Amino acid sequence: MKQYAKTIRESRKKLGWTQKQLAQKIHASQQAIARWENEVTEPRTENLQALSEALGVPLSHFIDRQTEIADDDFNALYRSLSPEDKVKTLDYMRLLKRQEMERNEFKDHPAS
Image 1 (tube, rainbow, N blue to C red):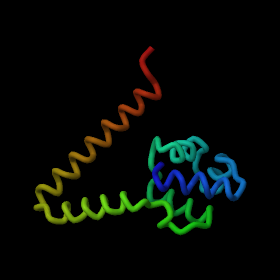
Image 2 (image 1 turned 90 degrees about the vertical axis):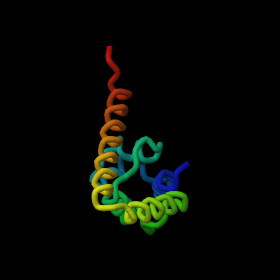
Image 3 (image 1 turned 180 degrees about the vertical axis):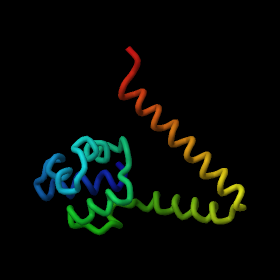
Image 4 (image 1 turned 60 degrees about the vertical axis):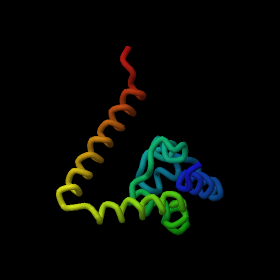
């Protein structure tokens, strides 16, 4: 289980809150909390900040060491690219994200 999912679930349960109660405290939906806890989607930075404050845990508790290492590797590689290749990298990442969102949309709403 990814660290952010484990931290959200365990911290929420420790406080005796339902997913809906946590969602209300951070101005999110219950579905978003469920998706984060089940690793369907990852919370954005602003969501992690809100979760940190609501649950009373440091932001660092949501980040696992593997992710931190991967982020450091990515950032080092990205910084080493030429400006032109940085643009290509971001364009490719946006394409991958769009494809991921389309796959998820298709899974959520398959054709009849």
